[in-house]
Length: 124
Image (cartoon, rainbow, N blue to C red; front, side, top):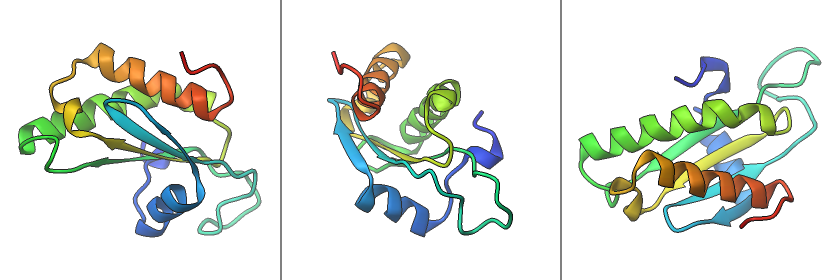
């Protein structure tokens, strides 16, 4: 499970990541990444905020059971990859319709490729 402090919940944060961040698309998902070295304006103090991730899984992916399964898989995959991202980053992972039929390894492969591309690594 993704720890509470690493969850993206506010609508404004989702909008910031999608509108002002960089995007990398893969066959099963699209990843939006907004990196900021600044502190979170919503939290008091001068410490850098943790990397936070949010997920968008629409009805096009499948029924409620399938959507929740995809969200659980993506949360589990992101938990292991949070350390690779710069502190204070906002990540939005949008699942595409094919992700409902994909297995865990396929989702992991697409997520890794998208994150690698956004962080400046080689995508393939």
